[in-house]
Image (cartoon, rainbow, N blue to C red; front, top):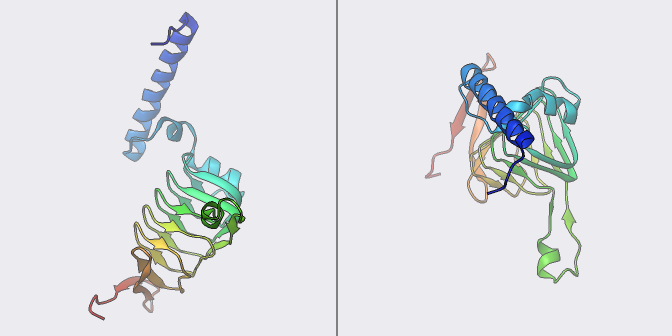
Length: 194
């Protein structure tokens, strides 16, 4: 065990007090137990720093690399990875759930060629009002059309048409998003036997 100085012991005690006070507020106000850093950093702060928009939420535990553009009113949950090294555009009003990985590059050919080939890059474009479920992965070169849904755990390797629901590994069309005359949404899933 590390031997702490008196000053370090007091600092540790102060940090623990802060952690419990912030956790108490988080549970009281949001009914959630966050990692310590999520309680320290306001979710809207990182959203504003990255996008310049005051209505964008990005959890502090999300990693952002490269050229990432994010539209207004977009929510990005905790523990996501947004790779913009090949260019990443996320539209307005999107929800990117916890643990989503969006990749705009891969090192597959470089690795298996014994480093004789370069890293491959291709942009990802996510249009407006797209929902991406928990733990989904979007691979390089993909465009996801507006008003689409990517199911939890899906691996998207090809473009997704507007108003389409995709799921699975690799992701395939499993339904459509319909709007009634009032603009209300109905998710219509495909019959498995089709």
